[in-house]
Image (cartoon, rainbow, N blue to C red):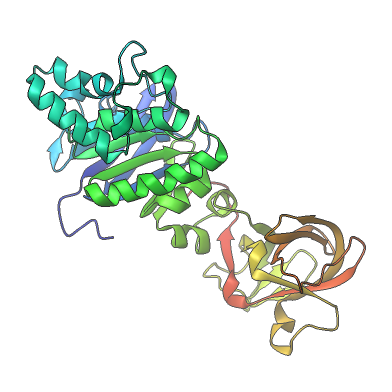
Length: 365
């Protein structure tokens, strides 16, 4: 999705946030397009929630510019911004029923009772709770409470909806169901959603684009495919999904040399002598007998021993110990699958287009 054709829904320019001597967000530049489902992903303490709170107006930038649809809002309070926020704890009023909770913000704005009723019911229908308008929060499931919080945020018709880990309190199955519902709702509304999460699968499932943060820095912004297949550094490769990171050095002929001396003709734009890591996804590796390696894959093959196998229903996950490190291999489980037991001598190989070389200089960009 292009962020240059129209005015960005949200634009941060060299935004920094300090709390005393702690730099929570370190000079980030970011554009979020109108109508985009955008995720901010990273471990606890990376700065993603602080960034969301600055967009919401709950924190102000120490330095830099923050615009919403071209208007500078960096010092405006939340009620002066065209945004609304859904938090993880929902913060519903326990003594109010669903329609009262949803319409409360409109009541505080002095909106007429008839308009409150109309708009609140519209928002409740959007989140599919039309039959539960008279229930109190303690009569609702966690998923239903989350929908009420969403309706309460949407009733004000924000141009940007901010979501701070809103699915974190739900169990796994319900969280997965709500992921699909949130994405469908966002498409229906056409409103920009900015979604903070530490859950990689959640971000990959729902988002048009994802920003990966670490230690206050913005490391990479891109689609799920870009982040998964072409991470910019070791941290992104390791944080997005599961991967094997194999230490290597770039040789004079632009191949990379693994720790055991094996040369791999992997794509790498790095100068000779550079310490790198080869990111190799478990599902891109084939496992087989040592004498079964196809000729075209001999240059990207290794031999080792199975030390562990885990059955996950839809797949088998093998740990294969090669000369100097264990590698994880994931294969589809079918009725005709060959299963290698611990102790088996095997070969592993992969297509050279499946690996990706990243610099090994730490977590910086």
